[in-house]
Length: 135
Image 1 (cartoon, rainbow, N blue to C red):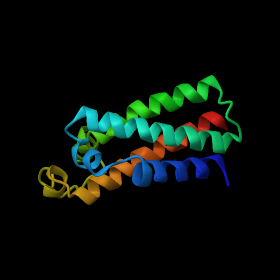
Image 2: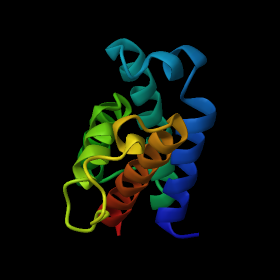
Image 3: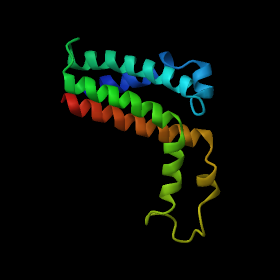
Image 4: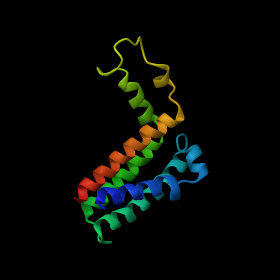
């Protein structure tokens, strides 16, 4: 397995199985304590993934710094406003629907599954950045 694949597994386990209680999932978008608690546990899961990917508990300082930055970014993404901002931004980019007259209802009030999908895309980009640092 590649380092990216190992880190992706760590992300999935950390974000979906081990690192999120029901309370955190229901409140992280509106409560910094819930969000920070989840992001800290996700960062710890990713730390173990990083050790697995490197094959050692001796993690380079650069990789540790990027991991900590990604933990903070994870919390910010999970507050939902960056995700909603991206939904709205895409309406003003040139590759939108040329026939649309203003933002679509889907963009103004996206369903939760679409918010979660974009959230996960952003988190997978984070995993790719961590993997690139240790490559």
